[in-house]
Length: 331
Ligand code: SF4
Ligand code: MG
Image 1 (cartoon, rainbow, N blue to C red):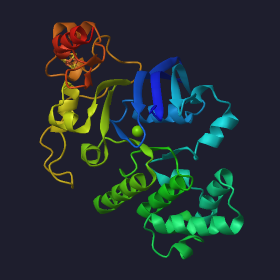
Image 2: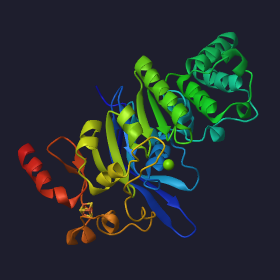
Image 3: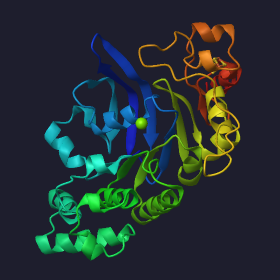
Image 4: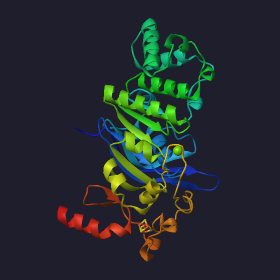
């Protein structure tokens, strides 16, 4: 079966006051049908820009300058805006961290879900109302019939996030892109939301691209993981491989710095330094200034993403010999 999403060489730039800076740099990945792919990394590594590039929601300063984004076989980057609009929020849906910015404050919840249904289904008015109430109930909001007529500000953050999921689900997307969907929520509600997304995925068979900085969420939700650093993919593996035997020193640092309980206490380790800003990426390995294992070559040459014997991929000079062995085997 062909992948639902195939991203190749995706490169995105933003134009600042003086010049264009690259924010996402030749990113390649696929999302298979029914699969949940996690994208992890600290903020400022290009995770959100990757998803906004796919959705074509970069805003006027951002631009994809190279690469292709095949969604169900069609390159979304080449589509007319009109065609893109009929895919977005339909076969391809997205939920964001802060639902208040994507809900319209002057329209009732029911009206907003109804609009999505109107745009993407042939349901009549009465059927749309029934379906909207059904969706509100499905995402675990009590008194769905009443909530239908409420405005977003009357709902808690967790409830608004549920409404966002209901809207995303309204058209049964093939791919849901969720950008830090639970980051702003407290731990209990976060767990409920993740459970809800898992149920939805099970019921519909949709694929999910889940952007998060939380490896606990990754462990719970994802089949495969990409780790991004300074605009590039630095490691890609199935979730068990990644969590049990991470290969890139950055991934190891991320795993070591996971707090030992859900309230964020007992953080025993933090990766020294900060993610370099776009436009200030070092010439060699972009992680070198923070890497405890850095060698002379790391300062000079940025390694390629190399194939490992266990099927994962890693962008680090430490694994060059293993990658060479994989190369000999496959040739
Ligand atoms: Fe560290 Fe060098 Fe590997 Fe970069 S290439 S992660 S600096 S060891
Ligand atoms: Mg982000």
